[in-house]
Length: 272
Image 1 (spheres, one colour):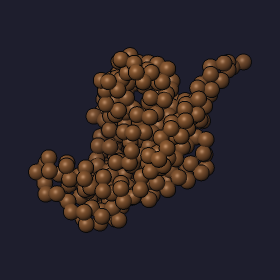
Image 2 (image 1 turned 120 degrees about the horizontal axis):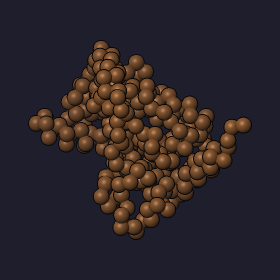
Image 3 (image 1 turned 90 degrees about the horizontal axis):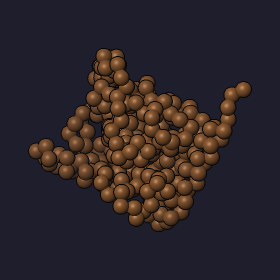
Image 4 (image 1 turned 180 degrees about the vertical axis):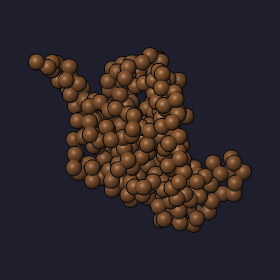
């Protein structure tokens, strides 16, 4: 894939391997000191100081992204809880932003050879992991990223960058729980663990000990941000997307158009 497609392997920053390792180790030591609990899948979930839970690697990746990622006004970030329509919204957004570069019937469309998570990568799972700080400066606009992180712990540059966009998708809590439970049991069985009962899964959910949960804190964090900045933060409901996908694609196209206008305006401006 070419760099213009926004997919592929991003080179690490050069000459910073020792510093990167120290940064990761420092955050790893910090997260390891926090309270932890067994989660759906049997792995330990750590409780962030801002109240949400995740396993060690994505928690550390979130903190490294906060420290190192520099957002652009034209960036668009997909945010979801796991099992809440993440793959679907990535497909819609990528197809919309790259519709001229890759028409739906093009033989070299990235969807023919790559998964959606390779087309729009997670900050905490793919970009900021394994002591790596990727060099994202050469990516052309519009850059697309994704995260499961609550709004309160997004990279600060995403929140502070003027006109940086966020597309959030929430799902009915019952459907989210059942999907999460089913997915966790597949993982548990692959590790030789006993399946989790639905009653136990509901207990984890109600206690908020779920990946990137509690559920309502996550949803309401993005909802309140959307109310404060409705042009910058889109708030989609999975069920409404199912009823009218075309309307939501149009909203994504409008969001992309605003990013393009912003980029062109910035390109025309030169300091005196």
